[in-house]
Every structure is written in C-alpha cells, then in structure tokens.
Image 1 (tube, rainbow, N blue to C red):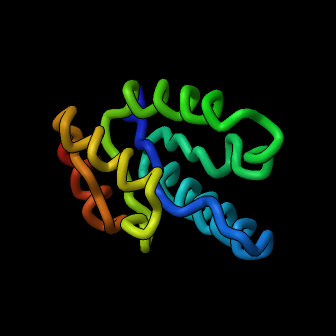
Image 2: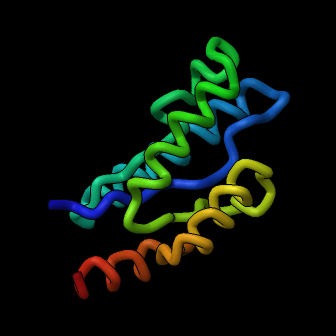
Length: 113
C-alpha cells in the first residue's frame, strides 16, 4: 500500500489568478509525489476551485479527514504564509508525522519504508 502524503500550502488569494497558480503548483507537487510511490492528497486539487462554492467548514472537515489518515505531510514552498497550512503542519507535528519540505527528503523517506 502506498503511504498517504498530505500536501499543505497556500490556496486562498484575493487575486483569482494567484489562487489558480496556487492550485496548479500544488497539483504539480502532487504528481511528483505520486511518481515517488506515494498517494498524495492535494486539498488544492480536491476542492481548490470549489473553495467559495462549498462551506469552509465542509472543506476543512474533508481536509481534516485526510490529514488524520496521512502517513506524512509535504509542505509546499511558502506554506508558512498560509494560516490553514500552519494549522495542518501543527497537527502533523502533534501526531508525530514526518514533515517534508523537499521532494528529495520525501524520496529518501519513501525508500526507507
């Protein structure tokens, strides 16, 4: 079975183009994480473009479900600028999940599994 890797990073932005760029960046990393033999959960791809169409509480509940199923967390560049990503990082640390900021480190962890 592939380990689930939760992807944390910026989503929201006042400029819809920047929000779309955030989603595309996250999707890019999700594809790279999948190539490493992991099962990425990318909230940006799952609900990114529907963000304002569904209640935020529902989006958070969905993300939390996958965060609690995850085996590791991958923090996108500039994740620390996102309130939601900071919360997800905190939960991951509290759960003792490995947190990665570089694909190379995730790859090394995956090889050790």
